[in-house]
Image (cartoon, rainbow, N blue to C red; front, side, top):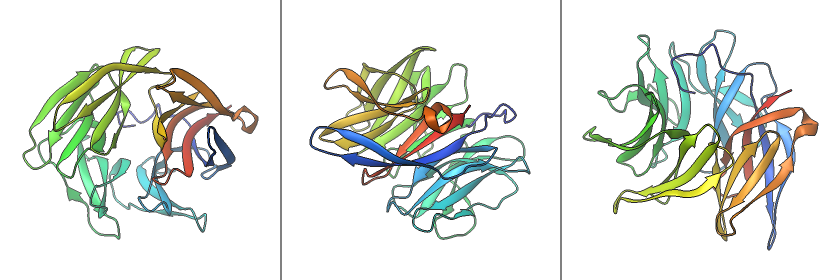
Amino acid sequence: MTTKIVAQLPNTDIWLLDIKTSKDSIHLQNPVNITHRVGYDNQPAFSPDGKYILYTSIREDKQADIYKYDLTSKTISQFTHTSTSEYSPTFTPDGRYISVIMVEPDSTQRLWKFPIHGGEPILVMKDIDSIGYHCWITKDSLAMIMITQPPTLEVVNVRTQKHSLLVSNAGRCITSVSQTLFFVQKQDSTKFFLSNYIKDIKLREKNYYKLPNEDFAILLYQQPIYFTGVKSKVVASYPFKEKDIPVIDLAKYGISKITRIAISSDGTRMAIVAESK
């Protein structure tokens, strides 16, 4: 999410799949609905050690909290217990915290972090609000999708809180690999172009590759592969081959629309967010 309007959120579930790779092919197997309830379960993030998933869940109290799914025991527990709403759980580069967008009592949306092993939340940046989504590039720098019209992508120095505009018309999905930020620029409602930004040399590649959807995840396998959802299908995009290949169709499981995708750091598991028929 994160916008200041919660009422329009859809009913979504999080599904877990195994990623199997061979010499020249990729397979997604054993889809399991790990939330399986009416309501909003979204924004999955694998822990760096691959042992659990954190995600945003809205329950009967209409408040968003962060929940934890243990991949071994297959149990769910509540991670944040606050009077505010938290979205977009993201592991910090040092592995000691998760950062979240917190919707404060006055509807301000700022970045906070919670200790992994429990404790009180800490405000990360006092002076920057209206943050929709975020992604760590380095331990001192962040990318932020700001709640503007159109949405803008900005980079910020966490220590100084100095931030600068990178692009407008940014998609909500941003991810960092080896201190390179990957993001989508939306030409219109149907055209999403993958771009990247490298902080130290400020390299940007605009209109790098047209993706089928604004939500994507990266699998580092021989060459980077970008996974997106197209209705009930998970599609693998191969920019170096200039082609998109459907990997699995989940329509038979009642899935009608796949949005968010996350991949574990070891590349063996995928979490998808899906709306059902």
